[in-house]
Image (cartoon, rainbow, N blue to C red; front, side, top):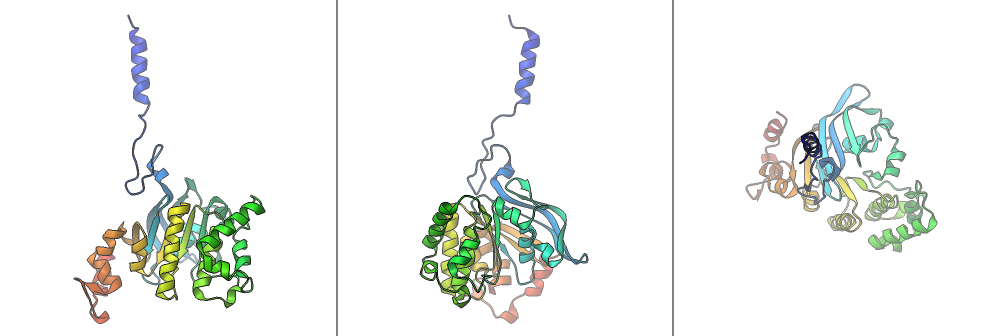
Length: 304
């Protein structure tokens, strides 16, 4: 005959032990065995950014980037996309900006207090807008600067350099050329390849299509897709080219005046009538004259 006290104790122990979780991320397939947050490599929670202790630029911005996914951050020029990326990569201090509220979690840890180079070592790196290369260095020298924080030896760096050349064959052809004398597309490829040399878990990619021909833009986005699928690199992509960004991303956030006004799956945003009219000048399946696009009406509704 069993002891009632033992039976009661086992019941309490069983009740206190949570069952193994069998939840998977809805759009990412990542098993969240410990926490739903484990599915996200980046979580930005209700942050505010102030410049010069006076100018409020971001107001309560929240977003998530699932592991191994591409997320688009959309908005017109001045909406706050670049500021959001710099808040994540801790580059605001160079412009007298600071995160005054909220929290930023990368790979399960709070990173607000880290320096930019410490964040790079953890696997988060930003590719700045404007194809910023070291103009006086060669393409290969630029790429090697991306491995500056690594401590795993010359052989591993050489393997990753060959990997970059595999994704960017044009860079291999131009490896000895001075970066400042290469084309805009080649400089953008060099900037992305340099980021890849740091062996990142996530790349913050700011306006990769800026000033490039459509064919080059398509080529660069195809490479981003391959890096995401084959190397497992997550991307947060800030872009004004809404059509191109939503074509390659799985999820998107739209910023206006420093606030997230809309978010959802990329396919749903691409078909949203407000998004098509506000950003593409298309409504009810027809392209409209710029004069007739109801910018003010949409802005008033979104920002109400």
